[in-house]
Length: 70
Ligand SMILES: [Zn+2]
Image (cartoon, rainbow, N blue to C red; front, side, top):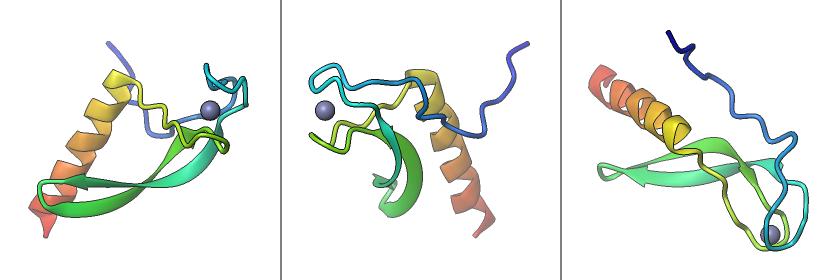
């Protein structure tokens, strides 16, 4: 059974283009007509945002839950 990931760690990730360590930065995402701010590993130079597919899926589920609770 896989543990649910709650925090996205930026440590250890490096931008493939800039070789710059990714930093945990707030990113605005829009989903189902609402925007949310989540902290994701992001390159401070080119703005590349790293979203692992399984993590993105987990976040989307969280967002869906937020929408349902409203
Ligand atoms: Zn970069």
